[in-house]
Image (cartoon, rainbow, N blue to C red; front, side, top):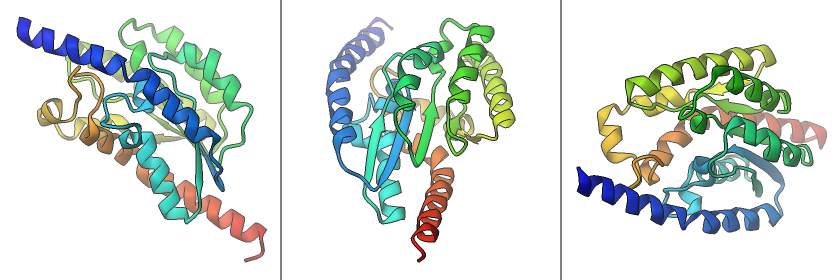
Length: 231
């Protein structure tokens, strides 16, 4: 047990060293030209921490998918911040979101709220986040947490996500169902060494929860642009 704990601690320390690397990578992508603008909000998982490279995180996978499906270049603005809670997203990410007009938006936030769970604080923060989103935004529910105690909190959080999203007509990506589907095998194969962040295979699962909804949104944007140009 001590050996396992030590390995996890060392892995977590190694992943911490990738935080500035991932942040710099996404800042560079935000400066690139793109015919479509994709904006992601979230925490360290949206940053791709745990993947072999930022592009292998779910935001990177979705950005590539958007480009392939649309046939257009994509500028990706990743507003996520490692460690962010919904309250912290309100303070940092929403003011930046207000400055852009994205074609596609994905949101995955709330996993960091589970450790110090307070339903009222979570709902207050998430209400503010959802109110600031464009109507086409795709929001994810919280992922599968495996342990029963955490899963009870996640169930309460996801009920809030579903209720607030339904009131605003926001589409919910079924992240919890997608990450639960692999079962116990997922715990063994889909996580980085810290046993918290996904690895490359885990991020493919995360991306799969968003993919059909992102495809629908891309098709809408392409159709709207074609109509506007008279094609």
